[in-house]
Image (cartoon, rainbow, N blue to C red):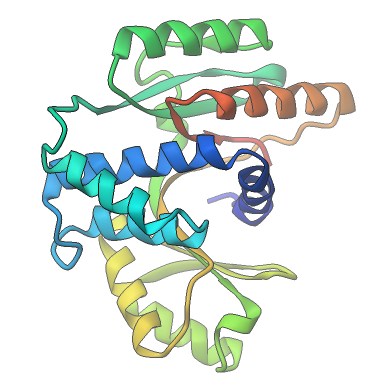
Length: 241
């Protein structure tokens, strides 16, 4: 698997979250609502809900917002027909992308995504046209200050819990694992008092492509920014290095 550039991406997202809190909060609470609809309101038995609530708390979503999102998932205030949809295609420079959306109106969402992509140098492809380039994996990131053990001991413990690969950076350590082992790794981290900076299920590129043209790089950044501004877009993954 190519080196995953999640550290860079998540720091950019955190910066944007400060400037666009209302939009980010709305996306996070939709994830909570959908998780409750799919698996119930008890996070002990609903791991997807646990992930969504932990992410909400990490970006300081108010407790009232979280509680209302859970209530909506249980049917309070009327039925909400949320669904996950994935769109695939090529962006500027031939970079492959996946756009994960959470929507209550599939027709609106597909029209908006196609318009945004076409206006910003990309094309939307058929279902499955890009998915083969990605692997669905668990990703857990720790800041270096999050664990007291030396890195070798930390990695050995995480391997025991199911870690497949590690990437180190100045910020910290990122663990890649099979999605079915994500909960085991989080439980092991909690047991040792190691708090992750970020975790979740992500689509990682099997092979990454480097953009060397600064103009194309700028166009790609704008492409991602405009997509992220859309209220239905939950996550974007690319094969850009």
